[in-house]
Image 1 (cartoon, rainbow, N blue to C red):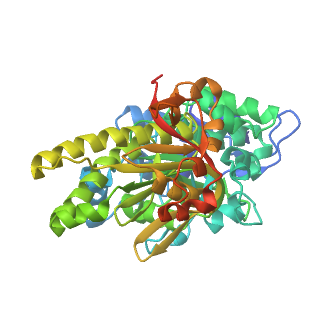
Image 2 (image 1 turned 30 degrees about the vertical axis):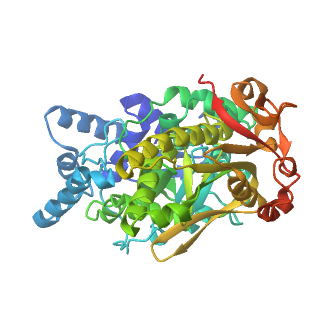
Length: 528
């Protein structure tokens, strides 16, 4: 018998293509057993009959004659069966519809051959076992499924992934460091076999390479030991980053709970909030999963609803429109709502630019969260976002002053604070609202109340966590009165709120519980 490594060397095909031939029934499922002492360090290998090499060469000859893989599989007696005409039409139509629906941002194509396992093409593969059904919920996905954030930390997994794939007895841990996907992959059954772990890592690192450079991955690498780190770096350098498609496909093989090496389709979907991985047993005559994944809004909303709460570093921004009651009284109701919607709509792309996560809108105010990113400082993101919102408000003010003949400005007052808090979601029906629990958001809200005339204020604690080289590019400080009662902006200074308010004013009472917090006004930041 030939093991899989020998078969690949003899025929010159890739491991992904070998998996595809097994999935198509051109080759039988391999016999999995422990290799001999002279067959390398792998703990288990798949073994094929000696005629497997000749079968593969026959496939290569038929491909040169122009036959498709489906035709070759039928010619060689594989498991492939032609789809009924009406089912073929509906399957192709479903995929083409997902291509043309810009609102769903889906770019999927059908391919009759996975070739060398190149990503970016969706392959409808042959079926095996019982006919599967799917009611359109991520809870009922037929194989392991999990989602990571942009730092490759797990934020959701299903039961199959938890127990069968990651072999994890407990629920997701609260701290994100323990949710490091790469570290968890080394803890799977494939982790003790260098060939299998490399194969498992390839699609994950190809997906990661789409968003992360190697320097950004250093933080992710830090949770691994030296041997694991060496494997990760080698695989990262070898894989090609995937294209711009929002969904890609890899043929792969997984060991089931019965110990059988079984063909699976791995689909990887990219969202702004993270990357979603789902494995599906190979089926030719059922594209239920493909149709479900094409409904991008439905999928991401379900994932976000079920995301597990976790403890994380976060910068909170709270922004409120100054004198909103006065503005509301001066405008007809429809124009006031038009103004507020104008602010929200123009601010949305700014928040996306700086990786802000929507929290909630309370009246005319807004809350956004900025989380650690692999390639930029989330605290600086919050500051730069705030300063761009300032510029945005000047443009909106000019539009409405011209329209209504006003002379006063429309201000958005911003408070920033940083801390480590639990992040989770509330949801009712189809609505999902994200929130941070703890004093970080409460302080940011109070600081926003304190800010006036469109200013941006941040806590000393937040700025102190920015490296000195980057902090010196920020123009921040406190306005002081000289002995001549002139106002002077003193840079690189802080002050407690108690020294900045009129303690005799009844309005200052709401700041009593935060009066000792040192804060500063942020006015500008030097671009790198």
